[in-house]
Image (cartoon, rainbow, N blue to C red; front, side, top):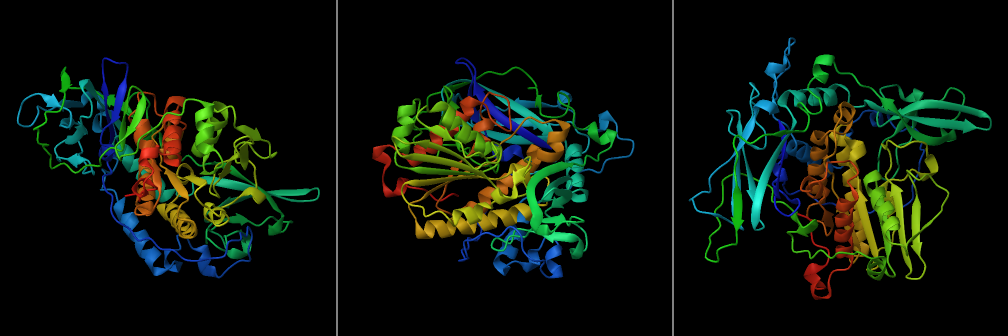
Amino acid sequence: MKRLFRMFSLPNGFIFLFLAVGFLIFLFYSQQLVESRNKPTTISMAVPVKPDKLKTFPPSHQQPSKEAVEMDVLKNLIAWPSTPLLPINLSWNDTSDPAHSSFTVLPKRGGGQWCVGDELEVLIQIYNFQGVAGKVVDHLNGSYSALFPLLWEGNVQVEVILVHSSEAVTVLQQVSRLQPYRIFFRSLFRSGPLTESTLCNVYIDAPQEQLCNYTDLYTGEPWFCYKPKKLSCDARVTHAMGGFKKNISRREEMLFQRGINLKVSIPPSSRYNISVHPRVQEQTKRTSNIVRKEPSGYYYHGVWRPLDGTKLQQFNSSKAASQCLRRKVLHLFGDSTIRQWFEYLISSFSDLKKFDLHTSQQAGPLMALDYTNNIMVTYRCHGPPIRFANVPVSQLRYIANELDHIDGGPNTAIVIGIWSHFSTFPVDVYIRRLQSIRKAVVRLLSRAPDTLVVIRTANPKALTVYETLTNSDWYSIQRDKLLREVFKGLNVRLVDAWDMVLAHHLPHNLHPQPPIIKNMIDLLLSYICPPPKDKTRENQPKRLG
């Protein structure tokens, strides 16, 4: 089962704290290898068909041994425990039911009043009749435990959300195993008045003579299209999402009902009142044996407060933002959640004007300029797989290749966000992409170590049946785990979008609402322009991990 936990303050509006996202079922973060290798910096979109082995995917056996070993380690990190098989005569009474589940706030260990710095322990009772061992502390009897750090004074309330039942996870696992390429793509080929359209994907199970091979020469990223009947493979002009194959039964679809068993709050077993008092100076911190991931921050009066020592500044005016970005270049690479940052910057800061490049407003490339302050902000989407409409092939670029074209330096900041479009594909596809980006980041930081590199994580979102089968939080948090692990130990900064969305009182959304985006942008600008007293060597880009 998958569940979300958050806690918020009652009297002053809604003051939220992200509480132990690790209890979302994944609490595992371990060290990984970081490898750098020099490579050419040009890009090729179409190459001759390579030997037959290239057709087989995932191509782990073709990778350098260290990357192959790392891929196996990473896949083991997100390995999921067995979930119950679905009986043919599945009934509602056999599934996890949030309406008949509950949680209980346990008394403070050792007794006494709650104080800032304590940890609040909650016992969750899930009546699912099956029982499944997850990475949450599962007591194997229908109950689970979660910890919430208490970081402010006042009255607080706990919210526990069941995202998916164990039976629903069974379906998601089955869909991933049996339909790994359920999202498919199309390319348009054109030569003069003649046009053709064919299907494309990361992998196509067909003889090579029937395929156009667009595997990138330098990153090794595979991409294939069926050959058009009359045109050459070189005549490919656009890339677009083709569609989605939905192939689940009605009884399976029953497990994904909004308001019933899909992202539904679990009620408390009884009324409770938690009043948090100031920390007692002599107070010793009591710890639990529950394994957990520490939150990266919390909200107080609507403002994000990082817990890694970063002092978040609020850039409430165009003048303040322009002063921070003066004589700087900000490159944004990724999916639509990164494009949202570009759009927020140009809509919020009047000095930054969009420069019309006559390109797709969805895929980019996009550019904004502030001539007075010599500021440039750019956005470009990542390479395929990407579910955008009609992206010119000439504008399909892999992030790793783009990074190799950037000089870097103290006046350059780079943001990378890549996760949402990889949810439906085998994790090998995503791991390989992250590995190639990481190597490019290492090369960039080697030639220009004072370049700021920021990674935006995944975030929870609103779910429908379609969203669940393509972008479920269950898929996203696994990719998020991989992203954090791959970049651990590098001199990069993190915008923890998962925590920042989960901790906020606003509804989950693939594209978070403006108050959350403002906090993300404030955090980004705080990384770019730390307060003067923080401008020490140790407060320059910190290693992630």
